[in-house]
Length: 115
Length: 112
Image (cartoon, rainbow over all chains, first blue to last red):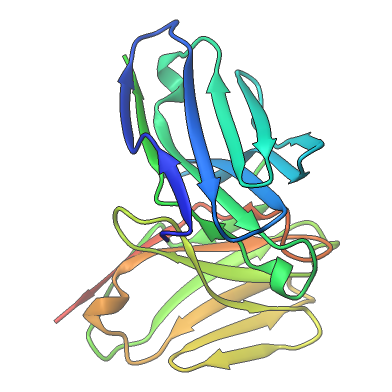
């Protein structure tokens, strides 16, 4: 979906390096999310933000941090990358209120490999 | 702890057949149950969703069946087509769709 963009699309890094994944959206949505996808585990929520001043941990936040720089930008950082953080990472957005807020719009993903 | 259990992990169906994917949940506070479809190299996209006040919702060839007492819901794809080949995720949330708990995914292949 061109309205939610993620950079980089692919990244290979080494253990111990700091890395940032970026997400931008032009949908005007207040709510943004970071997920990781692993084979056989589905999508798991890392962090979510309901507005610029609101940051919340998801089910697997350890080893990650986020920054909501603006309504349109939400970054995910790995302070010291480790191999088991190798995964496909997705950013998503949604409106604040139902019923339209029920739908999340996903970016194209970032494939991260930690050697 | 997997709050939404999805099966099967993979599924092969002949063109024109019916694809059925099942999910079971534990949290009785869940009140929104969407299905997302993901094609290779793409992010998931909402396919169809249901709330627990109805037992079935149909959109074209896609139907969700919902059994509140059994805490189960399923996706049925009628007249399956090769273009339906994708990974399907069920999900659940409380208070609307904003914080979703996903199933583990089903990789569907529709063969000619």
